[in-house]
Amino acid sequence: MEQQHSGSITVNVASARQFRIPPGPTESYSSAEDLFCWIIENFGLYGDIYRASVVGTEVYVISAPEYCERILRLNWQNYARKGQVVKRIALLLGNGLIASNGEFWANQRRMMQPAFSKNSISGMVEMIASINNELLDKWRQAAKRHEAVNVTRDVSSMVLKITLVAIFGDDYNVVAPHFNVLAEESARNLEFARSFSPLRKIILEVIAQRRRDNRAAATDILGKLMQARDRERGQPMPDAQLSKEVMTLVVAGHETSAGLLNWLWYLLSQHPRSRDKLSAELDRLPWPAVPTMDSFPKYAYTRKVIDEALRLYPPLWLMTRKAINDDHLGEFFVPAGTEIYISPYLIQRSPQLWEEPDDFDPDRMSPSGSYDRHELAMCPFGAGPRNCIGEQFARLEIQIHLIMFAKELVLRYDEQKLPEISTGMNLLSKHDIIMRPEIRGQ
Ligand code: HEM
Image 1 (tube, protein in one colour):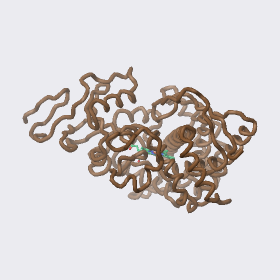
Image 2 (cartoon, rainbow, N blue to C red):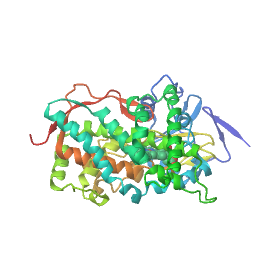
Image 3 (cartoon, helix red, strand yellow):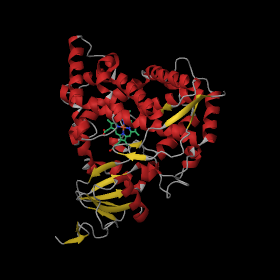
Image 4 (tube, rainbow, N blue to C red):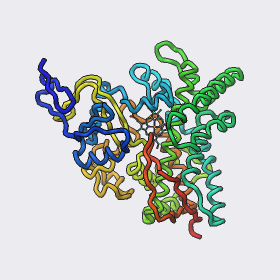
């Protein structure tokens, strides 16, 4: 069959007659550069689909929601594998839900999904509120003493505690001292990966102890995963796999939500009008002594504030896939083996999709402002079968935090320097964000 070369991609001419290869930089990306900055720079030059060579791999960087829809939803099975980037995650977390593929992934997802259903999550509202109360008290005291707080560290420790209690329930005190490394160390390198082996051992010990104590049916996430059964064979997950899934949930659930709250406080400090609107909503709506899942839908502006923060600072800034067979995206040909990069950050700040995309304007999230926008113009939790399993849980903890804290406190950012972005696995602030809490109305 006739073949033709375009850049370093070989195009099967017969199957690609009416398609073409997207434009892109001739120089390949080298790992010495910051991938985040490099991707943004080339988006500015080549637009919402471009091809590039990234450390020897052919990559298409996609920011058109229509193409993302094909990759993540319509033809997702052709892109069921994740790209090279996931190898680093697999090194850290093993073959858990984020890194696994194919039938194995589908089976694991089926077994894990019930632990994240609305029903399961609704039992966690009180626990999340109570852990928030501990930090609220600390920040209240700091406000009274006119002291600053380390927002980055404090929300990180709080979200870690919520994640661990949600997963381990009454065994929180057994695991907590070992897992604190996650809130203390932000590097996600090989050395950090090594510190994970002892954590897996701790999880295996907790599982064994639960069986000895006849506590295998606990109602926390670990309990639900221990009770889950494979649909075909009726078998439980092997313990080694269970520990990998639990590690995956801790890491995926902690840094993402904590990162978002960190940026959220910074954004509110820079936009007093939005903050005042939020305060007005919180003053109008009483926060129940015992909140439930039904307490939240009425906080409409609160939700818009959260969505707008997720738009500007999507914690998981890059999703990757690999084309199994040849495909096409509009007029462009996708040869088998091409890796696809989809960055919610690029899409959600695209000037083609959003007016004044870098501005913080929660009101744009109203239905009237978004009716003509593609659904995937917002995709902070991904889309399709591999979307975020923890979205409802994350939204719940972020809402509870914002409602409880913004009702009582205003956080001031006194630094002259704007916080810089640091992108590893997640979109974090390069340096800790330090702010001064004030009690509202004083
Ligand atoms: C603001 C918070 C969060 C954000 C923005 C977020 C974002 C995402 C995104 C974009 C994906 C899709 C990745 C891809 O398609 O390659 C994903 C997957 C995933 N997330 Fe989240 N996430 C958050 C919180 C959580 C929480 C709280 C948990 C669990 C406790 C969690 C667990 C997972 C897992 C296990 C996957 C892999 C799902 C699969 O492949 O089947 N995430 N997340």
